[in-house]
Image (tube, rainbow, N blue to C red):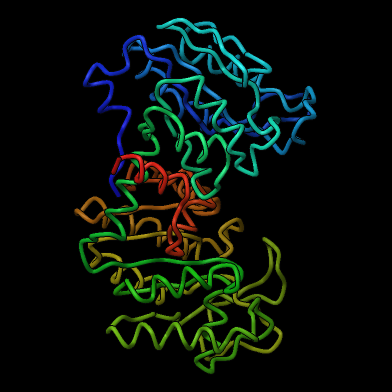
Length: 400
């Protein structure tokens, strides 16, 4: 994937005195009083803003926040808390501008935050009229919001068609580079871990990856459904019986290209789904009718560690057990450590998805993963093999 980058424009001196419009992802969680409870996305947006400011640009930044009704602004939809936090991080005042579609006043070297873009009528439907008005506000459009790259909206797609110059900010550019490296031209063996409660939510990903990877590791309810497909007893474990035929297709696709899917040989089972439930380690073919699988067993963990240690590239999406409960967290913990160790030895690892990021934080290995993706839905759609509209339009603009 080839796109123009903000960094390249800054290096060329092409931003001095220019009006730069940055679409960031500042959709942060807030408490009932409107206080920001976690500011990772705001901090992640700062490098692009600093880059444009230091290059002498007049900078406008916008984002969505929550799920506002278009054309009906409410106080809870306001980016005011974001403007305050952004100002603290930048060490300068960041004025918040409402009703900005028809014009924005900002001088070179200054930055303003444009109020919640999803309040504008036509944003979600990618209105050409709205996109053209926004494009007229700037000389350079920058998309730095990978988390919304799978959505074709006016500030993520439409404006990129009409702006004089359209480019990727550092956050988006890093995502493109990492994802291209992982699936476009990977160092092999390529190992993918896809875990979660349901095959149905990850079926397209499994089918797409089965045709590309050398080893496909599954976990959680997904692994249970694959165990069913192999004729194994799973008791009352979470699984989707009607998708057994689909699992068999995935296995066949892997087999055709010489890939493998190592299923658990032992599992941790309990009769109740709770943190302090009595549990035991069982052979995968010895799960009783009143038991449920809540983690992989130590022998399975050891086997997966060997697979991961041999990998050249690792894609990780999802924990392999109920890692929120310590009694059923060992499989995910050992998996995380194996990925961190393989990365230290030279493998390229990329991880994404909410539960995956929570596991990375729990086990303190964030600095031992090559790249952590910031976009949940966009990351998953990329793994599905789908075209991400916000990236596609930047590629088109780069081609001229």
